[in-house]
Figure 1 (cartoon, helix red, strand yellow):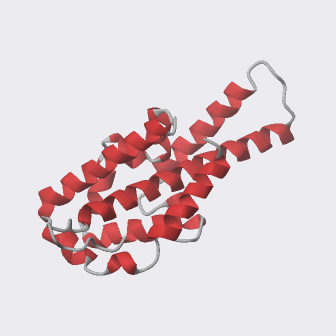
Figure 2 (tube, rainbow, N blue to C red):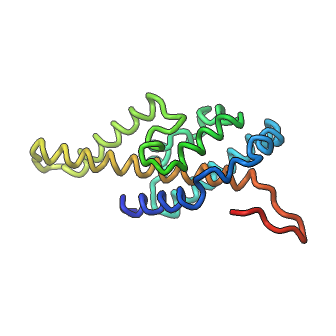
Figure 3 (cartoon, rainbow, N blue to C red):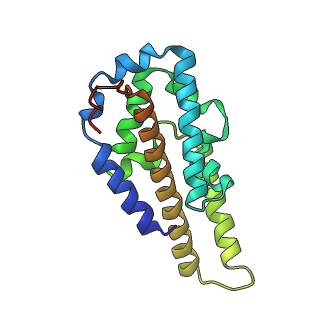
Length: 179
C-alpha cells in the first residue's frame, strides 16, 4: 500500500472516530469488563489489526516491527487500565499526524526496529548499485516515513477495535449507539 493511501485512510479514521464523543462512559465500561474481559478485548483487537495487515499486504514481520506491541509481548499490559487505553486512543485518533508516530507505548525497541527496517530496506533497494549519499538519505527518509505511516494506520485500527469492543451492543428493539 502506498504512503499516500495509508495517510488517507488514517486521516479518514481520525475524522470519523476522533473527537470527544467516544469518551462518554468509556472509562466505566472499560473498568466494568474486569481484567479478563479487558485482556480478551485487547487480544481481539490485536487479531483484527493482524487481519488488516494481511488484507493490505503488509508482511507480519513488518507489522510486528512498526507496531511492536502486536507481537505477543507484554507491551499491551499497560492498556489494562482505562486511563492507559484512553491515552492510546487519544494519541491514535488525534488529528495531529505527529501524535501517533511515537504512540503511548513506543520505546527504545520500537526506534531500534525502525532503524533496522530502514537500513535493511535501503540495503535491499540499493543491492549492487552505488548510490550517492543524497540518494541514500532520500531513500532512508522515504522508508522511515513509510514505517511511520504504517504505525499510525495500525494504531488507529487498534484504537478503533478497542472502541468498538467497549461499545454496548443494542438488544432487540434498542437503537444502536451512535458511531
